[in-house]
Amino acid sequence: MLLIGCSNHIEPARVEIITMLPEPWLITACNKPKIIGRTPAQTIAEDLPRLKNALSNCAKQVDDYLQWYEKQKLKTKNN
Image (tube, rainbow, N blue to C red; front, top):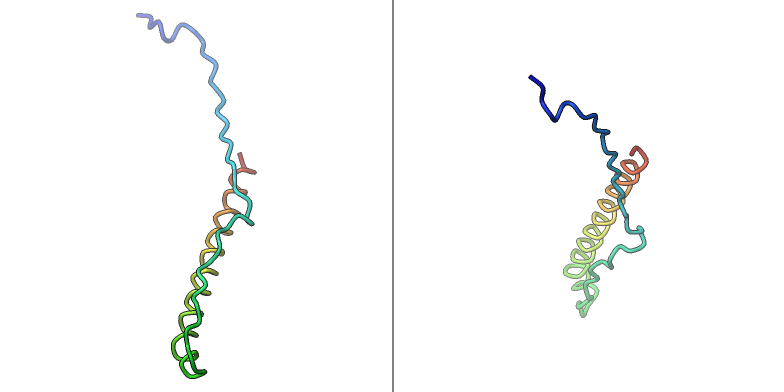
């Protein structure tokens, strides 16, 4: 028994994936909390923790993005 699909030779198609990456400088600006303390003690007690938290979150976003960007570049090179 002959199968029609097996009688013709079909060349495999080559698929190429092109990944377009945004430039690292396109990262959005981070949250910059306003300093609302009226005295040095109030600023240290209330504003400083909020500023430190905002800076940590911003740095984490940048680090995560740059790690992702490097992985995408490596994937692109290997293809």
